[in-house]
Image (cartoon, rainbow, N blue to C red; front, side, top):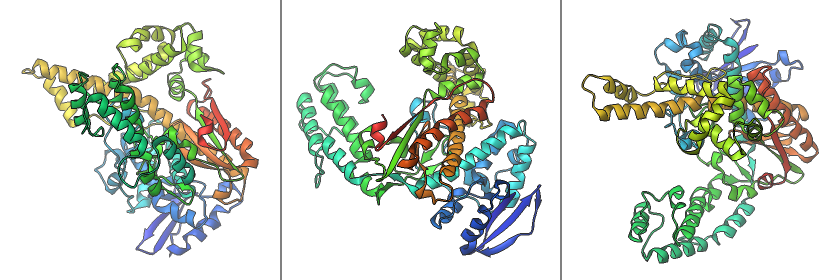
Length: 563
């Protein structure tokens, strides 16, 4: 049974039951009674008697219930589901996808497709904004059900929408519970690395490094935080670099490089996770970032402030379990290459990764001669590297694992043509921009220039690299959602009836890594649940195809101990 919830005016809620596609009698009641109403229906002893709540936006409805001590088992997040169905190739012919834009499209708007680069695809931690549409939730849900039922693969889309909605519940619960965090320990770590917090100016260690940099460059007034000024000082000293990026500076031999690189690293720590961050984001022993499920076009999560997706190793020692509790820190080994294995149904690659390190298995297959080469070759395949070591190794990888390489190559060619590609469960990539299409048209015009053609080729290759990786990364995001959804259910079953914050619960998620906060007595069972949930997620996505998704789960007192 589904129950659609809608706001009625400022202080009332309407609940509409749906069973077998037919709407029952609507019921209106004061918003203050919503927690009691939800509690009564969630308390049904049989799972089949507990409803799946349908609401506009989990972020708008669920926090209020959690604050009242009410947990929801299942929901349909119409905002997130609309974004998927509107863009998916599987539902492309539905009225929902072909109709004009509505308020739901404004509510589901996310950032434009990121540039197809490593940093954009993997290190995105945006400050997103936008609200949910409250209009016509019942009509929207009906349209979504029709879109799924008439799609090219209803089963895949139903699983994706259920996983996406479960992720929305988890995101709100993680914010409500918070990541256990010691402000005192964070201060100690900063003081050790940077020196004591100054009343003004730089901490002592940073100021000492700045003085070293000035002395080595003979630039007494240099502000090392200013890239233009630093670049000029480097060039005056005979260091002819094109930028002040660390990757380029590491290639230079000069006495200034070591203190400069250290300064840059510590300066980033101070600005991103220094004392100001601590005061803004850590309260009452918890770090509560605002997660945004589906905040990136690949389905990966974003955050609104706090930098939860970029918590640096230097401060992970401040993530400390409560007394009598433990942290279970788990990450999936070589997730994206294994996702590619399942997507392509490449049995040779599945054999290479079965029961062992995938990269070691690639070496054992004879495709390459050492593990480092296996990793470089796989990353090259997923990112389209055609030069250097990756380019040299690609022919050998292609001979050993033709199905896997063919899948990403076909995705790249589709992107170069301006076509859309789709993940395992049905999330589709955005089309290239109008400017991209204009550039491609200009290159094929009768009066095109060589510059037009070069620009068009470069843009086509760039978009091909994006679509090449999209199919893998978007499917990896789906696997992670299924992993967390299954894990959430298993953790709840470990302590039935207990409030969320008093039972094992998820407190952190980073693409292929989770942290569970659990009473110490249940830590071993929570760790087993983490591993079993990963295997279940693999079966949900790839059925009986024999691809392994090994997970390493460490039971620790601090996040730093797990690495």
